[in-house]
Image (cartoon, rainbow, N blue to C red; front, side, top):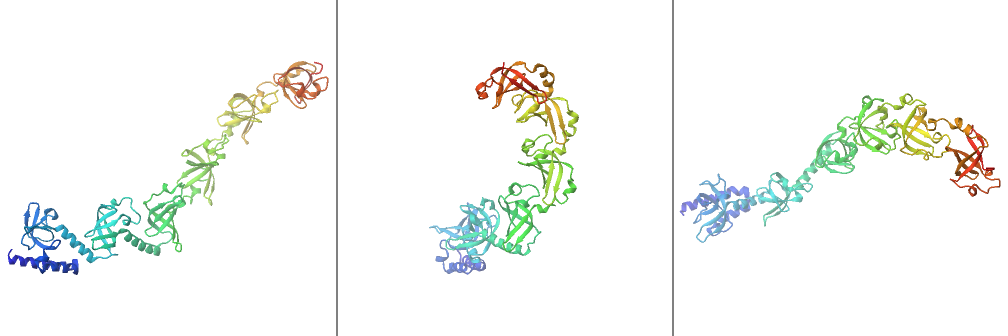
Length: 542
């Protein structure tokens, strides 16, 4: 190599060292200038030298670094503009062949220079900016001029489910550890965010006022509400302040990570507590409730909840009223609202009462329909015969449905002219279809009285006076035993009393010792009392 080319190469190295002084720091400048002390130090392995591109050879770029032989750098380490002949570049000596040729690397030189620049310009605690390159074990690799490690735990304020979402993003991070010897830098984006959050909190505290509308992000959801991050301060959005309407759980209204606008309801600076509201962004629907829902007006609604005492019906968002079980039907005795309605049913209701202080509305379902009792006397006049189904029985009678929802009471005393009944079951039972006569209609008390015995003539008037005269002997059957005597059925269910004193000419110790239930006997009619409808019987002289 000519002396002229050698001098040019040395001068270029000196100039390059000067150019790098500000970028790489004094330490690297000394390292670079020391390489000019002689070929022995200047061209040793891992040394960074300056050269010129003089051509290409196969897949390599040929570099003249002022050595006795050119060096070779893989073509892939250059872009199109950098690889032009005559361009100056810095390379690292990777290998020196026995024949004097050198294997060089532009990439490694750039990396080494980059490390010196980063180390020269930054220290632990400094904030740097870089692009997330890729995901690696335990975190991310970020390019800040050189690749640095961003641990997964330091990516965000809360550990991200997948740090891969940050690939390609430009992030700011704080240097938390520098290992110059191993060329290893660890950074934290979380620290930057925490500092930013702290500044935002301080600013927010100064400018926060009740009534402000603030944007926030849902941070956490509990059974009683949601915590909203306002950008440095967390506020509680209580479940009761989420909607004017019914909210069973906060997750029905908000989701974690969702950005929402909320109203500041209260701020306690000493306890650092903020109460937030979502429903307060809209007008309270109760403000003009009486104008929109006058007493007596009928509206459509949806059943939203059932309780043992009634059903809640939503008239509109934020407006619900209660239909008590007693206001569900004109005709049925409703024990539970699920007998009439179910959740999500569409119903028509009448406004019965509005309590503005408690924000409560009383509703009626039956009032929105025609009351069948208004025309009951026209449809069921007294004396008419009807047919119905026994729905229920009690000790005092049976309830008979004579039309859907309308029932009448058949009292035990109105089942038979002749039988003394203490329960309707011997004659009628649940599910039986019977015929009866309308005895009475009470519209106000909503009661109808029925009679079965009235379907036929009264035997006490038409038959008994003729067939049961005093002294007549008839066949009978013992139906019931008491301590004073027995009752005996003598004529189509007609019963008479055989007193203990009339059982025998001799004294009887007890009715049980003389007769048994079901025993057939002959008795003589002692007397017939048509007014009290009682018959006295005797076995003496029979």
